[in-house]
Structures are given as structure tokens and as C-alpha cells.
Length: 200
Image (cartoon, rainbow, N blue to C red; front, side):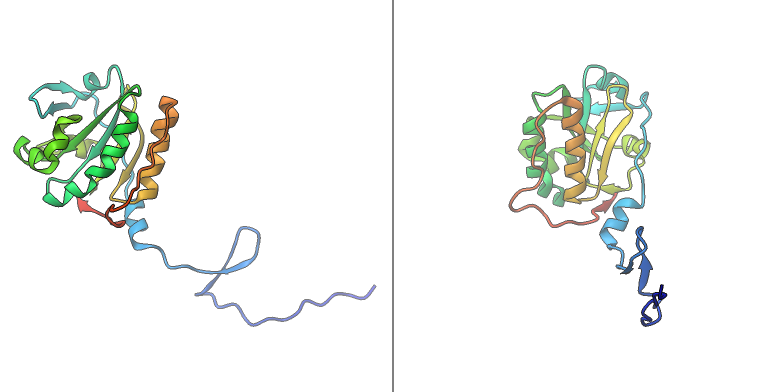
């Protein structure tokens, strides 16, 4: 039987080509800078004993706030630009407000700043003020806005840092799965473009 000769091709360019899992060659792609920022840190389980105060002045431990329900948090930076994400949060909260989870905003600043950022939205959902950034630091968050889902025992289910609509949709799916509830469409017309956000 005649032996088969492999056709000779041009030499591999190591800087541009790599082998896929099935042995095929493919060109390298430059990493997406924004995506790399989202993946640079991983949120962690917060301290259940940390104290968290609502905009109405009620202070409880995180464990107490989540005793009856999961917590679904949209954490916004303490700056005027954060209001651009209120429509996003409202879509999420509108779907989950009747589910077995507590939807809430969190702003890392004093009450007066939280009210300026949230405006009328402050009357539509629970609001936490994290003036000393205790919750943010305990969660290990480094970029805001963020979307966080915590179980009743305060362990982390999912989190998205910065504004990556796909990652926020992923967290929404995790909430819907845990609650056996409808999953909201996170994005909508007029939303801000994807961005890494601001340092927490």
C-alpha cells in the first residue's frame, strides 16, 4: 500500500497561531480589555455579622436582613452618573419583587448621597447605605455598579462587577433559578454601553 504524504504547509507563526482542543490551528485573539477587568477579581462570601443600615435608619446584621429571603442587591457608586443604571435595576426589581427574595439598592455613601443618586427610586425598594464600605469590602468587590445575589445564609450565589450586560443577565438567571421565577431581561433601550465602571 502506498504511503500517504502529508502536504507541507507554511511554518507555524507561534505568535499568531495556537492549537485548539481538537488539534486545529486557530489565530489568537487579543483579550477584551473590559472583559479582562470583569474577570480580574472574584467576589466572595461576606461576613454575616457585619452591620448594615437602611436608608430609614434601621441597623441589623447582614444575617438578620437575609433570614427570611435571599438578597438581590444592585450596588451603585456614590456619584451622579450612577442614576443611568436605575432603569436596569428597576427592570430586575419589577420581576423579582414578588419572588422569595429581598430586592435592594446599596450605595457606598451617607444617606443624603444615596437619596441624590436614587431620587424617586429610593421609595420603590429597600435601600442600604454602606458609608464605610463594609459590605463592599466584605464581598471583595472592586468595581461598581455591581449586581449581587446572596442566599439566606449570606453565602454568595453570583455577582457581576462593572457593567457587562451579559454578566448581569447571568446573575439574573441565577436568581430566577433559585427562586423558580421568571427571569427578567436586564438590558433595554437607552442603557449605558458596556464599561468597567468605577473603583469601589
